[in-house]
Image (cartoon, rainbow, N blue to C red; front, side):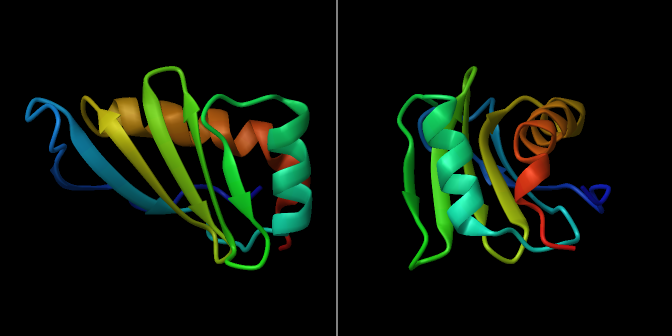
Length: 101
């Protein structure tokens, strides 16, 4: 897995203005066939994954995570940049076999 580049707190969450939506990138693409298989094996809550669209969504702890084929990641319900970095690190570890570069 490539290291995470920058993390941006894009905007407050609609359902709780004290939480944010964070955006970042892993710096490499994802093989969505592998990602969907991994997420299915882990039985991630609220998981939806489309290899055709190149996107996966799931819940991890209290975060709502969306990852894209190009390596972009959005995390909803983060408290701050450190919270987002923790979520991104956890996702990166879970999906380490799904990175393409």
